[in-house]
Length: 341
Ligand code: NAD
Ligand code: TYD
Image (cartoon, rainbow, N blue to C red; front, side, top):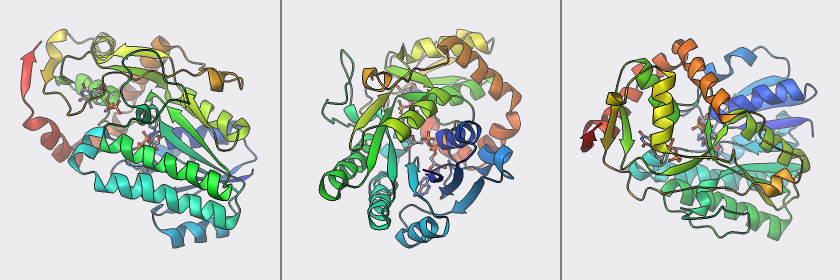
């Protein structure tokens, strides 16, 4: 393993992974392959732009010709697939692009891995494929029960991975990460949306009763879990990568209010997301048995994350002033207000 294609590497987790790999594996050569959708942003990779072991290719993972050409010309032996449409609310508005990238795009990468005889492909997936988890924690043996167009597309991508492994012995491994937070996260997701709104003195829209639970993980812990599976995971298997920090959204909201020195009057309860999964929870013993554990405490990493958005207004103000403002209006402008806190 030496020449890695990092698809979706200009997004939130992919760009953090690139930085981590350049630090921890200085012998690797990384090629980021990214469509630069609304969520892809070369600002996320600004600090590595001149690195001798980093290159960028602008492309769509659904474009089989360009994918193959890139694999050949860059002599790629390994693919790490972060490329995806990722936001549940957008998948409710428009599922088509999710199916094209998260299912069809994954198939294109699997087919190229098979055809060119690559060493390994890692498919970055999500705990959302298990669906809502009323009690206990999901293990890798649990059934798929996706409930949103996003999670159904991610489950579809995973199923193609299993099919390619069983049918063609394509060397693929899967990770299922829990909810990430950290630097460079597009401010449509709960934590960066709320931090940036609060820093600007704007209200934060809590869906429904605010009691939906997510299992939070700091992005660099997720990335170190992906690296562990990339190197030591058994082919054909899936590994949960969770932070074990299960919190209702309202608790996250109060923590962010405290860290930004704002009061509870900033909370607006708004109409719930349709089909909103109540709870996710991951059992991570399988990955831990390979010697992985999260290295960051929730409290410290949340404090550092808020500080990062405070210090890097250049990064998010640009985003929030562009096409994002139309999205925000569409998503939140007409949304029923349940009650002002
Ligand atoms: P993101 O939305 O920030 O980034 C996605 C990246 O993929 C962007 O750079 C985008 O331009 C690129 N992309 C989209 N479609 C593409 C295509 N057709 N071809 C090439 N590039 C394309 O997403 P993220 O939060 O960094 O998530 C990365 C991966 O991790 C996704 O597969 C997601 O499902 C998974 N995941 C995310 C989380 C989370 O909490 N964010 C948790 C678990 C798993
Ligand atoms: P999100 O960051 O969109 O991640 P996911 O839906 O993939 O878990 O949302 C995290 C939680 O926060 C989820 O329960 C929905 C909730 N949420 C809000 O309450 N308000 C918001 O404006 C957003 C974006 C999310």
